[in-house]
Amino acid sequence: MWSCVNSQLLLGIILGAALLIGLVARNLLAPRKRLDINTEALRSFVEFPAVVVFGSHDCVSCAPVIAALHKEGITFRELSWEKNARQIEELQILQVPTTWAVDGDGRIRLAVEGPLTKRQLRTLKLQNRR
Image (tube, rainbow, N blue to C red):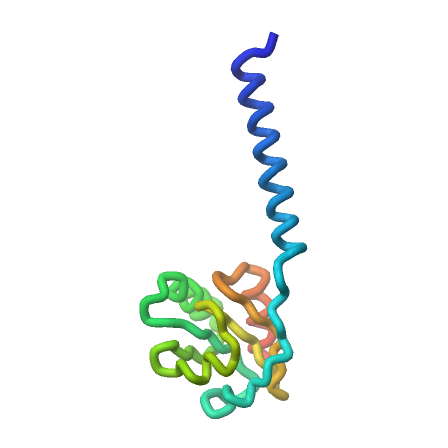
């Protein structure tokens, strides 16, 4: 005596659970971004501590990251793939946008590939005050 509504509800619950399991598995199994990269190639462009955004002129996802940093009043340096390809390759940047928070000693304290979350923006804002 299953009605159409009950079938749709059950299907929704199953799909929701599968999505949740997939997201959890992706976060647990995803490779972590290495934070021990030698940042010396960056010193000629940026004075540490710094927030750095690696982007590209044709990167659609870069503009929202840059806009969010501006909106939050976070001082940052943008390095484009077109002008700094060799340095970006040396720094092992695999995706744009990538945003780094680098401390005064040149250690990467935060590395984000892709869009920034509100929590990451808060972290960058705190790092930017130091």
